Length: 120
Picture 1 (cartoon, rainbow, N blue to C red):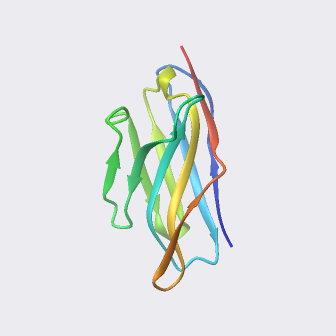
Picture 2: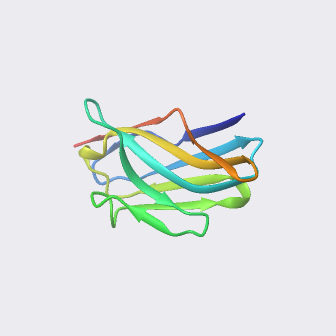
């Protein structure tokens, strides 16, 4: 069993900052790519940022220069530092991870999501 749990969401005014954290637990051999996605009401889930186990990163154009993804491999954690938040960043944020429970096989696991609300 593998579980991903997000934390750090909340309500903030435009221009503010939040730091999201996600921890993976369970019978894990290795974690490959990890990422953050978000889903606003009435919209499809979209990619926010991803990071490889070699720390290569990728960002959606809408968050470049404002958000920073990082990870701590020793703690099975991924973080999302969000600065200069805008009302359009309001969404449920989900973390995911490509996780191996046995050698040569990996699956994508998702967290339950954490709400981020940005008021103008």
